[in-house]
Length: 221
Image (cartoon, rainbow, N blue to C red; front, side, top):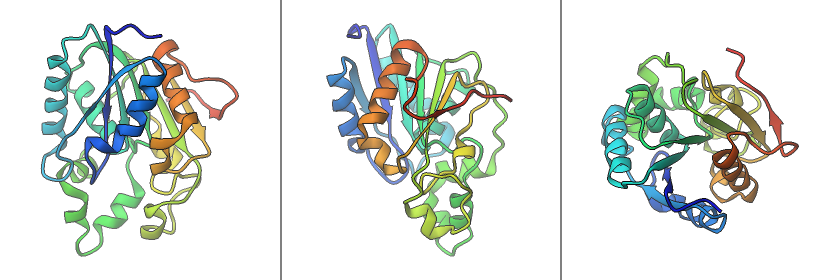
């Protein structure tokens, strides 16, 4: 069981609130972790603003070790915080369905009349800015999904395969990541998946995902 000196900060994705992470928070608590959910303004605030606020929130916890788990846009907020040298807590990072290498579905949505408004400031900043950072100095594990059922498939029928219905597996690869695993799960299903929760706990404890539960690959870039 993890010591209470460790806290896991869960960061939600686009359009939702920290309550979206409640099932995952409870699951990690059952696995021995003190987990909290951080809410941020995914629509009205920029990526850099949200990254700075996440760093301030993590510092306010006054916990020796702070881990981060981010779903979708929430993972981009975490990575922006790390890229800006706002690392907090000397912990590990797990990303779930995070489109670090761009998001084909979001770019297609941006082409629609009301698309830019639906994407919000943070996601638009991600699409407009380059992603050049390398995260080898951090312990980052990436979970991708290969069950292509989701809103992204309705917006973009040419979404690259394999994908989780919103984010393509290739879009989840982060430079310098320690481990990468592909599970047969869709984008929103990651938040309620027992298999995903087990993989998160394994990476937080050991810095590597469980073997034989998915297709694993190391970063080669």
